[in-house]
Each structure stands twice: as C-alpha cells, then as structure tokens.
Length: 144
Length: 133
Image (cartoon, rainbow over all chains, first blue to last red; front, side, top):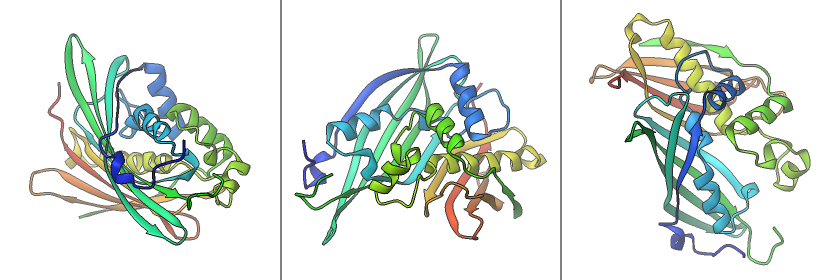
C-alpha cells in the first residue's frame, strides 16, 4: 500500500509490547561487533538492538527502509542491562513533521521506545530511546 | 575541562558491517549490498550510523576508565547526531572534551571525523554516579 501523503496522520502509531531476551551471548556479539571494551553490562548503545517496534511501524505504514536516514538517536540509560535480562519494550511514533518540495517530501519522524527488564516479578525501567529518522518520500507516481 | 585526544577506529569493511547488522538486527540492504545502496541513491554501502555511535560511546568510556574523577560513574544519557555518510574504507577518529556539570556529573562532547577531516557524527555522553544496585 503506498504511503499516505500526510504524515501527521501517523502520529500515535504504536508497536508492542515486544519481549526479547538480552542473553549473555547476544550482548557479547554486540560488544564484539562494535569493538567495545569488556564489561559486565550491555554497552551504552545496546538498545539499538530493540528496534523491532520501529520496523513494525515502518512496515505497517508502507515506508521502505531504503528511503530512511537516521538523523539522531538519544538514550536515557536508567539501569544497566545485564546478561539474561528479559526485556519488554513498546514503541510509539511520537511526532511527524513534513516538509514538501519539488522533489517530493521529507518527513522527520520521532519514535520513542520505553524498555523495561522483568526481574524477579518486577518491571524495572532500564532505558528510553528517541530516534529521529528522515523519510524521503518520492513524488506520488514514481516507482519505489 | 579535559581534552579527549582523537583515537582511530578500524577501517570500515563489508565484514564489519555484516557483523554489526547481525548483532544489531539492522539488516537494511543499504549497509550490505552495493546494488541496493546505489538504487537508494548512495555511492555505495554506508556504515550504520549506530555503529559509529557505538564508537562514540566507547571513546567516552575509555576516557572515563582513566579518569579518577569519573570513578563510580556510568553513562546515564547518550545522544548522537549523524551528519555525513561513512563509506567502506573510511577511517574514523573520535575525540572531544569533557566538563563537570553543576549537578556533580560530567558531560563528554564527542566528534567523529573521517580521514578527510570531515565530521561524520557528533555525540554527547552524560556521566553520573550510578544509583542502581
């Protein structure tokens, strides 16, 4: 389905709650892939691995990944993520600002994700993420 | 205020991006497939912005591990901004500066530059005393 031409309608789109395990192996693979120094908890940008909610929203809205550029990423790290943590996260498209031009439209999308760890029956907030992503929408009628 | 001297990271390779794609779950073909990158209007596969972001955080943590004033602190907020593409073969160097903040924490400002001296990525890491168990 082709994307809507007014991205303001997309505000409020949600995904989740999604559960993923931050196994020790998963953390170690991420640590190796980014060349991080050794440590007990996950490296500071580990929550980038929790983007399934963002991808679900893009797919639902018909936005191809190849038309996206990551502009900015913010994290609040509330509690270190430990190997073995069961994580649960929800993502919301918090804002969409559109700028139209002759070459199509640029949409500045803000996606917020809240992450908790389920530890011994408690929901422990471990972090929040704010992604700012630019979607380059081609003029209607062009092949994607 | 302290200066963080620029430190270089390994040159960006296709293997590195493949490993990062697998570990991060971001397998957008613009990072892995030259044809997909070109179809998206890019000169070739580009590094994931978040890979360079991870390097910014690593640079900040290396600095913190050597500073007695930051002992017992951890990164509580981390922001990165992606300013220019990073291509295969690029060598990224990361430096910056740190300053103490009125709340007793330390803020580290970071810049990543490629081998041509162009800023590709900027970031900020806020360190504070860990309040968690």
